[in-house]
Length: 252
Image (cartoon, rainbow, N blue to C red; front, side, top):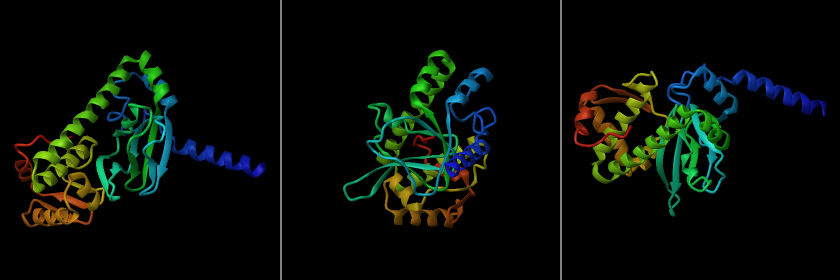
């Protein structure tokens, strides 16, 4: 009994050390709290479950799991995907710090896809029932939830465009521009970053062979458009990447 009490005390101490309020979170302008007053922010802060962390390749949820709420990435990265009959993964999306995932469970209260950490990842959980009740008294929060849902739909449409109308090199260029703009929005460099996903995952997202991804990375580097070292990417000619997708809509 004493050992169990000590274990709980240690866990509580660790939680208090790791807990960071929405008010002090560096991602607050990119997550749900955007535009909320100090008072409303405190109300939201009390219902958020955090932090949770997973090692790379750990499954966060899978199809059929009960939908409990939205997930907000704090660090690392998460991929969502479905599996084909062959066992291959069809990558649906990549989620970076400050981005929300898990909305696929809204339709019938069950998750419809897999979500897994791409690297050491931490995230917050926003319980759906409590969040829904809070939205009833905080109109700004409800508007932000709608904004996030609309953004997810736009990303889905852009992904379909990417798979259906772009050539392989346009797909990779569009992907790099998307990652670049998302890192820039978070205050990081838009031209020098580390990709949290593997080339195999990139291939699954773009709908091309992994060998094609490697060949295109090599081609872009030989043209002086990028410099790549494992997962480290330096964009040397942003204008050239934009020219490649000038006639296509870039997914954000």
